[in-house]
Amino acid sequence: MFKRLKEDIAAVKEKDPAARSSLEIYFLYPGFKAVRRHRRAHWFYNRGLFFIARWISQRTVRKTGIEIHPAAKIGRRVFIDHGTGVVIGATAEVGDDTVIYQGVTLGGTGKETGKRHPTIGKNVMIGAGAKVLGPITVGDNSRIAAGSVVLHDVPENSTAVGTPARVVRRNGVKVSPLDQIHIPDPVEQEIINISKKICKIEMYIDANIKEHDNINHRPDNGK
Image (cartoon, rainbow, N blue to C red):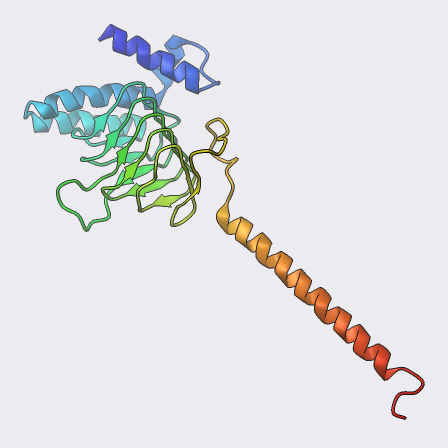
């Protein structure tokens, strides 16, 4: 138990530059508290003590603003940063070393039975406000940009962006360090491409208008 506790604190120190001490993390970090309490609730849930498991879970929501169903499977060294508004469903699975920011939902679409929630691989970053919905898989070492809505599988070593999310980076392309905002937006890039095309069309039209005006104003025009 103490080994796992030290491991969780070390993970927070590594992933959060604002963390100043182990005591601060232990007493004041809601994400740390939520993960620790979930492990307790999950232990009771696996032994059929569902009421106690849910009681721990609901107390955790009131104290931290983070809701993790007792049945969810949370790996080692998982860090929920800030955490307010995070919701993790009953059949969700989160791999080791994953970072989850505030407002993230690992939920269902309301259309499935059985396995209804996503499976998140190891060393994944899920940005603030992202929604990962349904029994889909996000591969190891992948990143979900802030505000994205993920409805389909994301391969490992990939970056997914947008609503609905599309994969914009995959294997073979250098991936920058974990970051929520410095990720290319495919919609923005498409708008830029369209703007460039519009500028070319406008230049072509202007050139033709000038040529037409020059022809009309020649001295021999009409002869």
